[in-house]
Image (cartoon, rainbow, N blue to C red):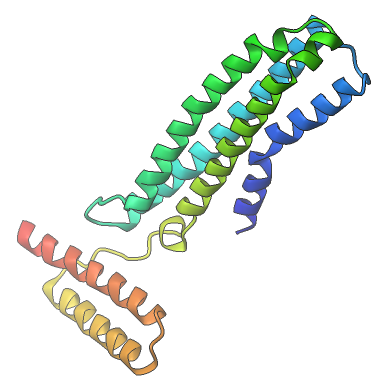
Length: 204
């Protein structure tokens, strides 16, 4: 979980850079020259790319582990939704970056910067919304069932498959006794092991 918390903090770095730079710029702690504005924009653009890449890599890892953990290669819907969200946010932020580059960051004086503050405020809003969606994608992809190591080993024989089914029934019975959900997760893993064993037997 610590890795996820760290990645969430990294995701919001572009917003922190934007707000800090804008505050220093408007307080005249740095020059409003074309070269300085270009430098600030490049820093923000790079941070946005890093955030998108971080979340994309996280979701990709989740998808890969899900494929390993699910014998039928059925990718969970939540992971596909997370992957789609990252792609949509990437397009949205690229458009937002392009617009703010041609407006606020095309200024060459404090007066022009002040006149174009609404453009910067709009970009800040779009950036914040996009980064929040990236954080949501991390939450969607973070599930121990997907992120852990493979949770079952193929069962090579019919007798082993039968044993796995028996163990799953015991776990279901335990759930019915105390209402806890962990036995259901264990039962599902045993059913999957049995499925692999039966599939292997059919393939012989």
